[in-house]
Amino acid sequence: MKKYFTTSEVFAFLDLETTGGNAAYDRITEVGIRFWQNDEIIDEYQTLVNPETRISPFIESLTGISNAMVADAPVFAEIADDLKEKLEGVIFVAHNARFDYSFVKSEFRRLGQAFSAPVLCTVKLSRHLYPEFRRHNMDALITRHGLAQVQRHRAMGDVSAMFEFFHHAMTDKGRERFDEALRYLLKRPSVPSHLPPDILSDLPHSPGVYRFYGENDVLLYVGKSTNIQQRVASHFSGDHNTNKGVRISESLRRVDWTQTAGELGALLLELKQIKSLSPLFNRRSRAAKTLVSIELAANHAGYLQARLVREIEPHRLGDYYGLFRSKKDAERALSGIAQKNDLCNKLLGLEPEREGPCFQRTLGRCKGACDGGEDVVRYNLRAQIGFHGLRLRTWPWQGPVGVVERDQRTGTTDILVIYNWLHITTVHHEDELQDISVRGASVTFDLDSYKLVVKALMGQDGRQLKVIELPGIGEPEVLMP
Image 1 (tube, one colour):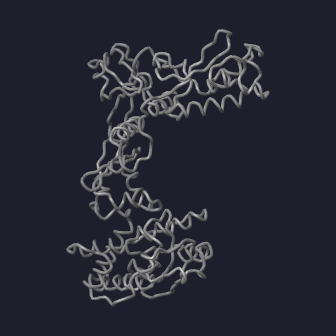
Image 2: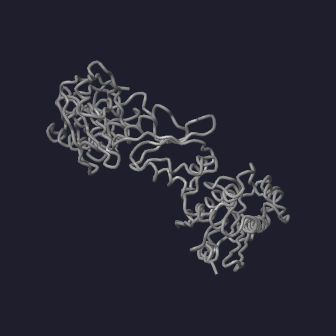
Image 3: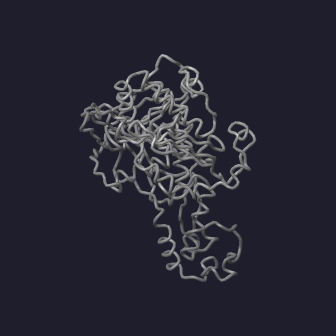
């Protein structure tokens, strides 16, 4: 007798009722599961769940589950151990599985526990087996296939409808065809329904940047990876556990990408596109309108005095301390340095300029640099120690450099032309370096780019990059935002 795929696995047909559609803050109110193996129902599980929050009148009307019904029901934490044991090693089957799976993962995450399982979505199963039909929601399947009427929007009612569709499709399409569909759907990531099923086969296994687009070609998300195919697949293969991930998947209509020869090129391109294209779901901060730094200079008495500066001369970055997106951020850093190193608030610009000692001196918390009561050398040494970690890196080369990245898989090469920690342009062969000039070009200093390139070129990320000095191509003008 031929052994089919479906005879050995345990399938857990699961449906949830919830207080709303957002797994990040809505909660489960009912769980229903039917366990099936070797063509037999082997177990069922059903319980109401106290969501520990109010059920809205709309949800009460939709599901029939009231606040009074769940008042004495167990909270999720009380059923978690039992539920996790029952779901261990099973195939998690649900209609629109992203919804149910995201809620189960979120509930376990609130308890500090991880949950994962192979997922089978019966919406996708229906699309795969019946591609000629447009609609695949549960009501459409009940009507189309003549399934028994059930109590909709109650957990076990929806489980029964899903289970009946599963068996109807198995009979209708034949066991071998059905088994083939299950193998196909379970061996691959759960690609969002609006994308071509074979989208992942088109993606390269190389470094670069990928972009997700929604309806009307609205840019949803920009990401980078050293392997575009694997990273995009990870968005679809169980990363349904955040509200953002679910929203992106539901909105996604198109994916495109740009290959690079290495990780640094991918990082810089991702950064540039996030700042210039403003995708909806990227939370990384966009370019600051004006960066603020700190400059130290001796006052008339010889004490080092701090002042905030907005005009930074890129050729002497080593004279500045820290890059901040706002004056408030800079002052917060100054306050922390003052407290840790017993520095004078007045000399750090945290108090208004006035005659006499600083306010902290009157409280006995300043050693007296503000009124000449402390040795200059000792004070300045503490100041230099306190600010040392914030000192900006001076550009260590005479002019621009070319940073070489090579993708061994594809054989492609990128040479990233960088000056003062900023990416100017990219060429793909050393011969092209002879024909370019950046003299007179302008580029805006960027905090995120500065941090990223310093880390890469100074070897702080463990990479050893080939660097070619390019003194003959001129120097671009570096502008401050």
